[in-house]
Amino acid sequence: MIYYCSKQFLIATGIGPTLVEISDYPFYPGRVYRLFLSQGGRLTINSLEVLLVCDEKATYQQGTNTRT
Image (spheres, rainbow, N blue to C red):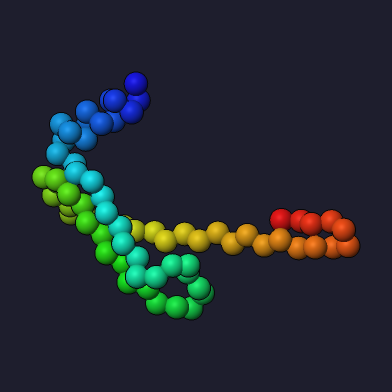
């Protein structure tokens, strides 16, 4: 039901698909990456904010125990 309502809202407002392309993956600290963002549809955008959020996951071994 929520999916259907969301889809109908996007169709009614003319918001098309969003495409994001990143120049390289995986990400490494200190490197520069290029980003391409495309928003389809009849939508006029006055401002846009893109946040790149990276989470680090580390696994440590202490004796026979492994901690993440």
